[in-house]
Length: 586
Ligand code: AMP
Image (cartoon, rainbow, N blue to C red):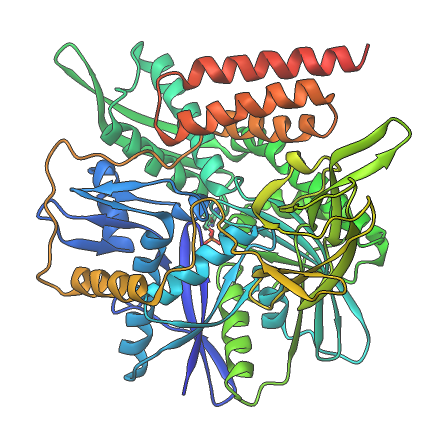
């Protein structure tokens, strides 16, 4: 039985296979190795996946969705016709298309896969990815981290230990990992990233830059309708790609606007240096992430043996230059940066189904996992402290236990609230779910001990169980995270049948002109602001943290609902950060 490796990317996806010891990315019918991670419906309601969907994005953004990976693990809905799709359901469509691509290329049915995710993905995002695979009709043998897959693809197996920085800048996510490879063992020592930073942001910055040039040239704005803006965005992306090999490139977009009865065109030459000015601050953030990952791995830059670049955006010369200047060595090249993750996933899939590939995989957990606990202090019991059970960067699979005692006399109930994150205040981390251990016998404070056991498996899925010491009573956590639940077998069957129907060539859905999908893009300014807010949460006092969390919640809702209140909220957040931070430095 053959198993494929899948790089399910924000912008592009690929499927690869190992056959007779050779690993290769499988092409689609058009010969293209890359499948754009884009899904849409034509004006007649026919399902479109990949380049076909991407092609209509400019003309029909309301019927097309890109970058769905940014929403994985949330309950953000995309509406096509009268049907709503959750992010993992859209991803299932992409995975199903990749499965079909592999089956066409190999002439046999494929039912097993290894799928990659950014090292920084949360538990909910991993679970959603696994569910997407299952809906697509794939048994997900393993979810592995993208940097680990990339390192596997480079096959850096030698007797000596090599320490490798894997810098992955794709379309929508950024990840940096420090990986240690000894012989056949690949271990992620540390990783950092921002799952909302990538080439899409560079496109948006260029889009704004081009809109500005157009205004200066013609004295009027580029029309604000979705179709025109989507064309401008597509032109911006092409310009960005042209500026990788060339120091200057020309952008030509005819009939972009009008003044009275005169049609207006955009035609201008852009220098790479001007593009670099736009993206430099975002790239500087990625260098900070490298430093954080190195610190976590307790390594100095001069202890790094090799730098691997992953993701299409690392073809930008400034990316390579800034990394070289920062770490004092040139990145290794050899494998195309946008294919190496899929190749590594295929190698791992081969290992799991017994192909003769001898690489062993060791992964780490990206976020600390623990529970909210009450701690005794001189002033009394302080609740809500984040007690870490599995620290971040632990090698997986990992199981750890911790014993907690009751803090009150005659305490009957213990609430187990599970979080992931790095903040010492439990509430400020990501809640994963909770459950209660009830009917405890009446005992004085400290008289009852409950063991909390965390089990984190190879797919990054967490199971929490509790045992009351002496009684053996068991409680178990059903992780019911962010609206993503494991599907029941009936639900899974139904979801698969729906997908089958969509892929049957004649099946269409009703599309009307008014149908629209919610925008799945976040402006880079807002992304940067949210990032700063995340940092601020770690430093502000608890009253301010509550206020900030409230504001972030409102912004999240506004983004999900495309609310007109978003700019106002953005301004409030900007003001908040300004005052919070300037007060802090006083
Ligand atoms: P990936 O997610 O790894 O497939 O990377 C996709 C991103 O890489 C998109 O934002 C592309 O626009 C970008 N990209 C692809 N080729 C180039 C290139 N030659 N120069 C700059 N960016 C590129």
